[in-house]
Image (cartoon, rainbow, N blue to C red; front, side, top):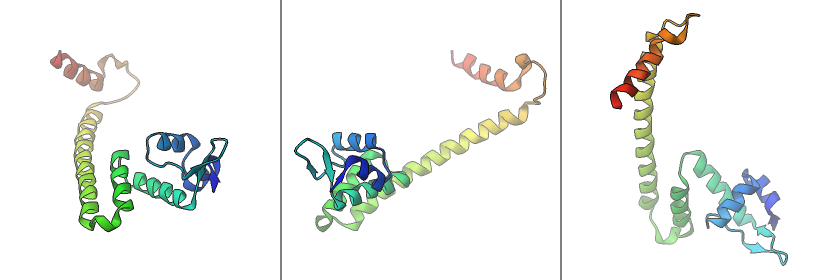
Length: 138
């Protein structure tokens, strides 16, 4: 059994993150000592590493909870159930990429319109363009 500091080191999370996950039912420790210390088992560490990896590939905490439920009920669930969670995340990523592409395009247009230089920013085309958008929406 590992105390929280050891579990944090083994899982790659901070102690505060482990407390947060415990409080929110995402990764509760297997036991508590008589004095109330959280005690993590090898299985708990594996669960924390699973969470870490899922977060690294972009799953939200809600999706991680769903994946953990699927993981703990493998015998009752199908690969299609897991694939559906992943499909939903892929759709979110694709939508975000489209948004970022539009933002990049708009920023690049602003950037190219500006001559730069040491002149006063009073005539800056970027600031004027941003003011125009703000003025149009008021």
